[in-house]
Image 1 (tube, helix red, strand yellow):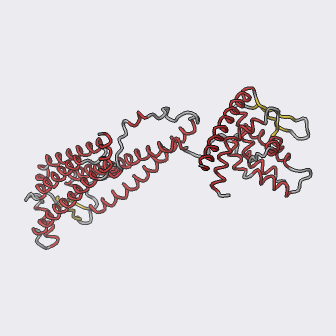
Image 2 (cartoon, chains in turn yellow, brown):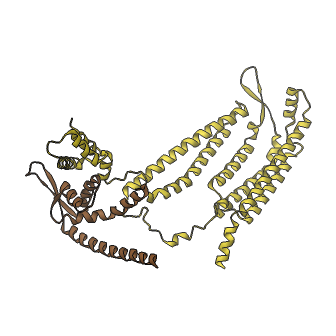
Length: 341
Length: 115
């Protein structure tokens, strides 16, 4: 059984066309050189074992690296992924949520719309994420293959000057892009819910099997509309806080104080809005009372109280977290200050 | 021999391989004759490393190659180019410097051990 020809073929088929014949001829004659006269199959096997795995040999012949993204680019690759992925996914989620809410006509129940938003947003975020990873990888592979090994990728060699714009922030205090995006999403959802309250929060009735018909909005729309300065103030201060966080990049005591002010403002304004005596549409209350056959005046009080307590609890946690993060890593900072002094 | 030691030795030898190969190419050699020459000096070279290395040296214009088809089997001969000779001499000088420096370091360490 001839083993030499298949071995040579196994090596050369992995090589670029232009070097195949030459390598084949050289390999063939080398193997024959290594063999004694009138070789047995055992001799051939010994020689081929010495030459080793044809795939390994072929890889050594070819100049192409056997990796997609080399060590020189790998860190930059990870950084770009970490920067781009959250942004893209958040944009996709926001646009799905906004589109769903804006196109809400009241033909389906609130629960099913929330469920479908959740499912669609998850899928959209996942597919956008996969797409981004794929295209970023493709771009990096192209850069990897097109830069010669001596060249520094992206042109510049490292100098200490590059440290200027990179303050050392302890990881525990760092404000992640996720945190910023979360805040943005929360604000966007809040404002959208407010603007579309007339269709989102309403009682629907089935009318002779001809689909759902809006019987009454839950909130008193005039009162709700009069709240717009509060909502604008909240959205504005929330955006200001997010921008401030984005500039600061880390939690500080000052930021924690600002965060506290924002949370206090939010709880106060929410309490004012929710405890407005005419917040709920009397028609809706009557409608519900009729449907449930019970007195709901207690229920609306209960709803108000729950909303305020929930807001207080969550704001309290957020305030506490802010201070906790701001205090983290202060030991390191103290050291730094001492060194500077 | 431990795996770590083997890999450290391989790594250490890898750098010297080019120099060893270049040193034997003042006269034309084909692959297997080169292997034999190196092995007779005690330098064991992985064959799957040598042939690709020769090709790379050729691409870097340190060696030139010719096919000799006059004998029973065709052989590819490699020989140093002028540029290759130049580089070889520089590498050789550098190797001698390094080995002297290392020798001094290792000697010094032995003396330290004695004191």
